[in-house]
Length: 179
Image (cartoon, rainbow, N blue to C red; front, side, top):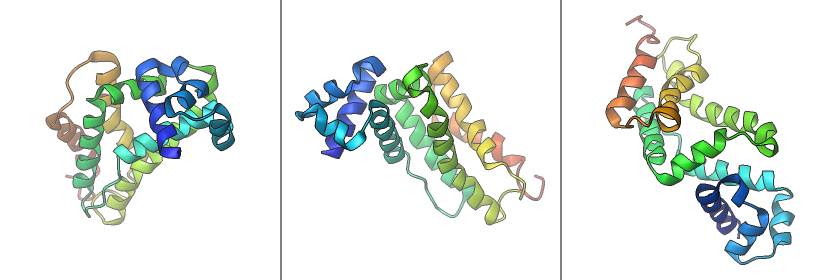
C-alpha cells in the first residue's frame, strides 16, 4: 500500500500541484479510505515529504565508482534526465513553490537532499582527488544551481555537455595539486 500511496501522491503533485494533492484525492486514487493514509502518515505534510523524498532518492541514486568526477557525472546526468521529464519539472517547481504548509519542512528537505549528494564530494576529498578544504555542499550547489535555473527560469536546454562543463568548473579549482 505504501508504494501505491506514494506513487499516487507524486502523480497528483505532478499533475495538479499542492492544491490537488489532498489526502482524500490520494486515497481515492489508490482505492483506500482516508483514515488508512492518515494512520500511516499522520499529516498531509508528512505524506507529501515522504512521496517527494522517496521519488527523488529512487530516481537519483548516489554512485560510488571510486572517481569523484565520474560519480558526479552519473548523478547529475540522472538529475538532468529527471528534470527533462514533465514529472521532474513539476516536482522541482513544486519543491520551491511557496506554501505555508510546507515552508517549515522545506529547509530540512533540501538540506537532506544536498547532504546526500555531498557524500560524493567528501569521498573525493578522502581519496585525495580534491583539496582537503573543499566545501562539499557548495560544490553540489554550484553544479545543481544552473540546472535548476534552466528549468525554473530560462528554459535553456539541459544536456551532457552542460553537466560535464559545470562539473569541470566546480572541480578543476579543487584539485590538491592546484591544477
